[in-house]
Length: 246
Image (tube, rainbow, N blue to C red):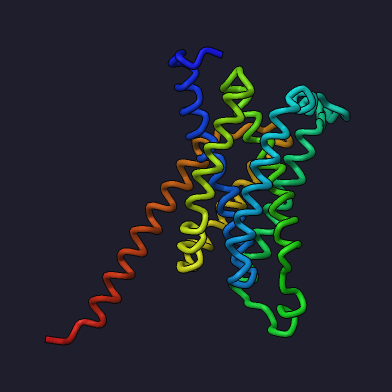
């Protein structure tokens, strides 16, 4: 490998930035799930979740031949003029998307309707159950991330380096992001809505209906900008309300 080749470093930088962007949805999911644990377990759950994501991505990168085989259909059916086929990748995307939609919808319902105190005690999530849910979604997000990496770089070492660098950045900022989400209920609701959107996109991809991710990320970024403006407005109104009357 020629480390003096500028193309290698450009590829590494581009792929690292892309991995960070692709990891934002995973980060949001980890933040929301870990927030349901006792305070002393939350930071540990985030670190374990991101570490599992890193391990999953590296293992998939080191087994590229198997990942590429996931694209081959194992089931086909003729529906009129349309041929419906299902591959291992499609199945993972479908199940992951449905899980994400179901879990996010449940979380939104719980935030809006509340839960019975006795039931919530019985159903209080454990550290193991939260980490298990994170691991299941890590597999889905890792598959998307690895396929993107394969399409952008030719050398496995560049892909692994980009994934590791992206994870280091996310590990550094996961606690700050989680604290921000926890302090602002409207941001948490927005994040859950994003997860439903991402889950819908995964289901569509599972049925071979490609959706340009640029549109998704633009919509998410625009929504966050509007919400940040709303937060500033609410803060300004609160300050004005507490000012002495002249």
